[in-house]
Length: 422
Ligand SMILES: Cc1ncc(COP(=O)(O)O)c(C=O)c1O
Image (cartoon, rainbow, N blue to C red; front, side):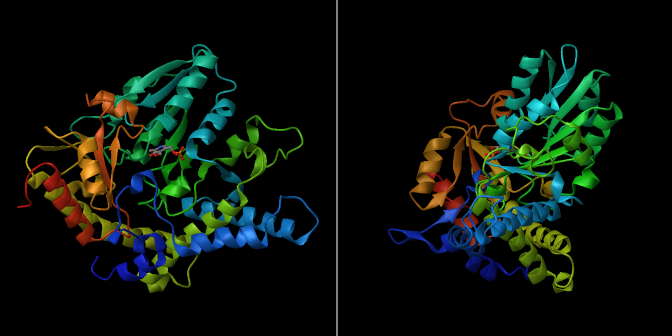
């Protein structure tokens, strides 16, 4: 996207201007967590200075704190295309929220009931279900992804479902291969057998305008610190389920939505930052498509993601093509430049001789931050026969990265593996 306002975007993120011993930083560790705009920093610190109080008091700061909590739920409802802010549950991260909710979701299930997890998911959407299945004596089935298409194939899902399937935990986009599943189709198949669909959208949320109603799922989880916000987790759930489900909570806290599953004191200042992060995507939308400037926040968020995607895709192509031009590299994921709409800009690879850690250390020495390891995609590395203790090098692009950063990274990888750029 040639008219993407990259300079204005970068100017909003103060961390991008930082240097270490005069060397600038290249943040390509985005799938593990993104940087935040100054507006998020300001919102967090303003909350701590001006409205730092617990909820439910009669005084001005407590009343303002309530408004911050409400605003965060409203912002996430807009972000996810939900009608009802009550359907948003916020907490410390996706994994503890999923552990917490899994207990309520599976409360009435028992021996003979079946639950499906995938080989494509992060542990955050596998381990909670394995734990509760063990507690309840449920049967666990494991859904593979296709090693050629890198996605979950509908036929493989259908083959696992029975009239005893109670829940399917599915992955929207992989944090290792980057592939995006056709989630709407997969959810449709799950709903045909009357099971619940719990979607891990942690890695799609920074790149795609999610729409829970269109997807048709029952629950959808994401992590705001992956989309330019503070360290928080979020789960959207259909009100009909959340209202019906038993909440494991303190007796004196409300049994009404949205607080029903948010037991304990809220992370107030981070919720203030979360609203600012959602506003950042809306800002991007109105910058890139001024026709949305007067529209709803949801319209601007959708426009923001459209612009970010159009900007990120050529960078993804540049990175993949550049890596493939270097000898001895195997990319685990879609590389066909005509299928980039089926992946997020998260590229994982290994070199035939040089270990991932050696490559990430060589890049770190140049101020280029990438991840190495299994990235908690435990099932994925096992399924792909990747050594668990080594994993992959993972490079993840966000809408504030540049072509020059991609080129510097390719150069750094070339040097690390003892070659030169073509
Ligand atoms: C796909 C995916 N799911 C779940 C998680 C866990 O998220 P959290 O750190 O919010 O628990 C991550 C974190 O990297 C992830 O990438």
